[in-house]
Length: 91
Length: 125
Length: 143
Image (cartoon, rainbow over all chains, first blue to last red; front, side, top):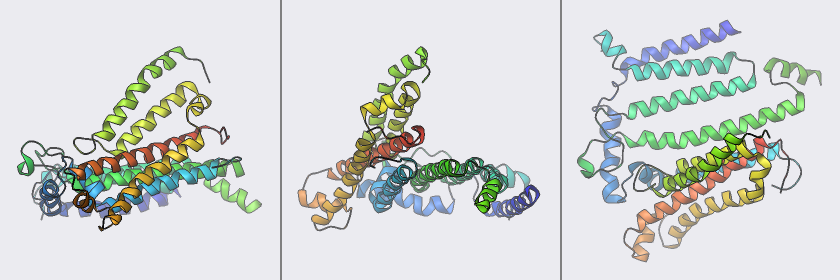
């Protein structure tokens, strides 16, 4: 069992190591993700929303619906743990 | 194409570290029989993904994505992976909490937290 | 719970500062490093410290399971309420610009984002504390 797991993990590892050479270097300013999408958000947040923290602006404004779902997820986790572990009494 | 050793290994060490951490987590997830150790493996796996995302957001010489006095002309790191990982961490915590409480219930019901022993106990009933 | 004077004294000193720092992190979500998720989790960490130092029953006497659940619901309601407020002002769901245009208050966008962050902070803090209560308390009901 342990040997099979090790073989599977090493196989996945070799595939991933093979893929590393196509990735941009660490801290590369010309990486595609940084050049297009990241720069777009950095340019747009100040005129669009006007707050200083870009991460909060994306989190609460551009991706507000996603964040609402996120809060519902953690609320659901709290309810699930209460339903699983709390017995007797009310929720 | 990659020309040299240093270009492959030294300038991309963040990916190597993330992949090694991910393989450790995957091995723990597959090979460990103890359910709590499986959850620890899942958390190591998640941490590797977080490290991968945050490290490719890095821009050499960039500051944190909070506007300084220079405005949009200053060099910032990519803010989008930070947002994605901020929400992913919350999902990770939720998954860990629900999984641990399920393990607590399994232990109360069957008295084992080992996967094979659990299957034996379940078949015997 | 073991009586340990050092842990109890130090945590009694540290908990107010941790909670003030958590509120600072939540309030600074729009203008500096911070946000609702981070501040909520720091606030929940102060509850973990109190549970370790004083035991679950002592902390539950301050806020019980029902109160925590209500706080969690209130947090989500603040967030979703602002979303529906934007619907009411003829915008899309969570479209802050619509509220700003109708009410005509400058910088309302940032204030609404701060409110949303406060809602996230309350909800995350309450959910975390609820999970901690259930996992640490052997499932007993105290309220």
